[in-house]
Length: 344
Ligand code: KG4
Ligand code: ZN
Image 1: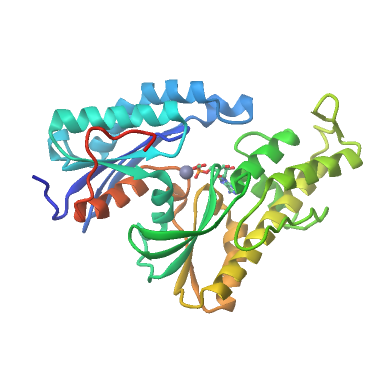
Image 2: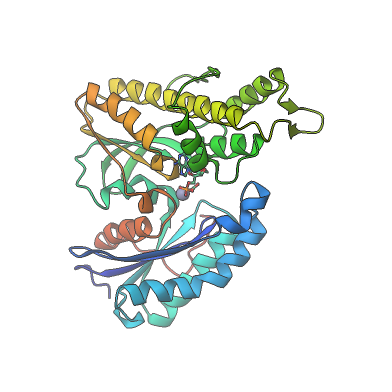
């Protein structure tokens, strides 16, 4: 029943605080990729509030899917298969996308493919680039930090990952600590640039054995350093110098350099451990960071490897990467069915 030649795939992504839909057709590329970001809704809370996220998903899913169809100049009947993120993520948010996709697949009598959000990120740099296999992928987002060894589309092993917080989470939590808005990553990059990426405070670089990462200690290191500078009150949990822009900039700059150093160190280590690799990709929301890109590029240059990254629109959560992964799974007849769940 399935058409495997250049199918038109609708991708749906609702794993966290973005409602996204995209349409991909092999040979023609991404026909549309649209999203509604809930950043404004969560800004005042310093992070994503799951209940608010799922309610907003419910409101936006239909208009966003419609917009993706309109932008691609297509109608519902033109879609051959639906790829939807079914894990991991916030349960309430995931459920909206999965239920919507299942209802659409049933109503249109077309197949459905459940996609792991992390596989979406892991292959996001391949949407716009032909990356030679095998390659190493560094995924750094708000929820995940992992190193993958990728041998083919859909074939990958985890070489290392964070044992506690994700890199993006570290940016977000430390931004909150010093009264900067959510999400922390972009604003920290901006403030760090204004200080020429100088490392003022030399926060300790956590370095778990092997290829794993750890970022939770960094938040504590920044916290204690602020206390030492009379800039944070542990009792009231308040930043005491909200108007000291220089201090905010110094923390931002030192933090970005520290996190970048940790990635550079791990990248050099993984390259040495895997001399067979032909390239490196850097993906996920944190990969929007131009300073980190440039620094990781220096490491790759040293080993004669090319560093690939997605355009910004495919770094942060998006449905394009879900439709793209859906496409290669469809080609291999790797379908799900209507029992698709967010837990398995
Ligand atoms: O991939 P993403 O949209 O969501 C998850 O799957 O988690 O990543 C969001 C994360 C946030 O933590 C945000 O602070 C971080 O990506 N981020 C950045 C930058 N832009 C977004 N981190 C560092 N520098 C940036 N320019
Ligand atoms: Zn993500």
